[in-house]
Length: 112
Length: 116
Image 1 (spheres, rainbow over the protein chains, first blue to last red):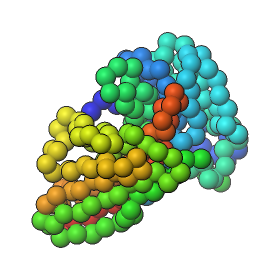
Image 2: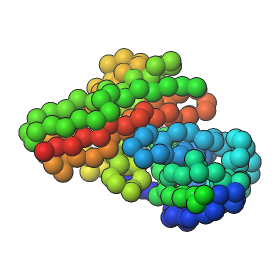
Image 3: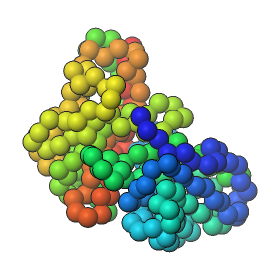
């Protein structure tokens, strides 16, 4: 199936550092969602974006809807150990069945 | 927030048997639910879209006779893995879409299926 490309694939960071990850596509999307998944659990919604250029925050998390509508970015400030997990972006297709296409995921590991 | 409950969270079955997984939206009605499959260290792959009161829409390559989906009410969708084989072992996750303009999807906690 179709997937979005996420970068980086994985990253190790020190506690307290800021984290940036992005999601790119060759297709245009009208909605971007960012999820976090812990091992053995379902994804939990972090942020939803609806407009090109939109910048939305949720605590230490900030996400942006790219102006081309083909990409999105997620930033985590002052990382803490519980930020460990896999982060997925998801873009809503603009035609057909209106389903979400998921990114390949960014695996984050925080070193205390 | 919207809560999606998935049951069971873990199931082991013998090869050749069928397994049913339930997905319930607890505090909202979901006309559309989705079933995903996730292999270790990989992303979520959409298997099918479950529509209340109508037939499910399956993604290319997903056998509809193998993975039976029923969405009989606005709060319940079920996935039945028929005649399960070891290659069906995986993590299955459902999600429910909140009706309205936001198109937000909330996920269940997933079901880990192990077929012996």
